[in-house]
Image (cartoon, each protein chain N blue to C red):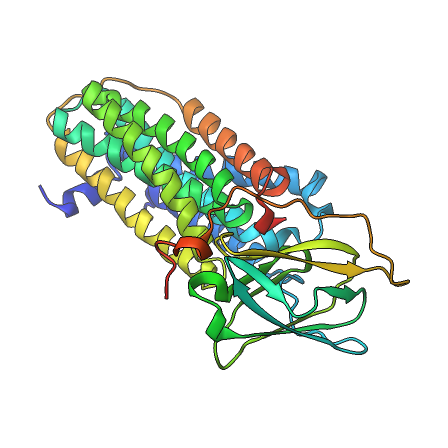
Length: 156
Length: 227
């Protein structure tokens, strides 16, 4: 039986895709931390006011788990979709699951934002000795402000 | 002339008979480029595979589907106005959307949008000019729109099923690009092939797109959300 050249190319292409795909997809990593509890828990409340995330207390200790309980009734639209990129936290909050837990492993001032970078806020992680670190995570200041006038496309 | 004729022609002597070979070459070039980069540099980057590997893999697959269409259009050079506009629009939109989506998923909306728009406009205008200024303009417009749309979609899905959406979006784009190959075949079936070429362009485009995408996704600037 004569095999056509293009059939071989097609099989070759499929083989490459399968081999590379299985290599890429089989490797698991450590992204998206989330609920890792370490030592005492620092519990705070969070809600949104004027397009900003507001914490009942916004200074945390390094190495100690932070437990953020969100007041969903005060979190409009896409503000429920939280990203804290410095600590690999990505979570969409619901009324049934309104808690974010993570353990900060570095000190400084960090950003919290919604997944569209429209609602924003900051919090500080103090060094082990309780001193405020000089590091400030660069903020993307070019997003729009959902809170002031509602945000088209991410309401709800 | 049906789709069956087209599939038959995939083994024929016209340019359609070279499409699968072009996909194969594009995949080889892109994966060899990625492999070399991985061996010398990327494997030392923490969480490279889980963070970026998935999107790079699908970006490479996307380019392997776009490149054959470029070869097919170059082979016929000229098309009538309506078909040329369709070509410019489809290539511009698909290249822009896919490029923007995969870079947007790792670097944020701004950088994804810029990259997608650039790739979409360049390829859309280049392919669209086969029918003159209308196709050229259509390519620019589609590339502009597709690039930003792709990046925006990725960013909006960041806390949702971003990976599953990536697979679905890729599959839909693959069907659209295959349909475009079929459409070009239908529209040019009476035309003689005007250009015969080796696979230099395939290799260059695949290499350049893969290299730029890899650099952007792994080392490129990213917005605060993706820090």
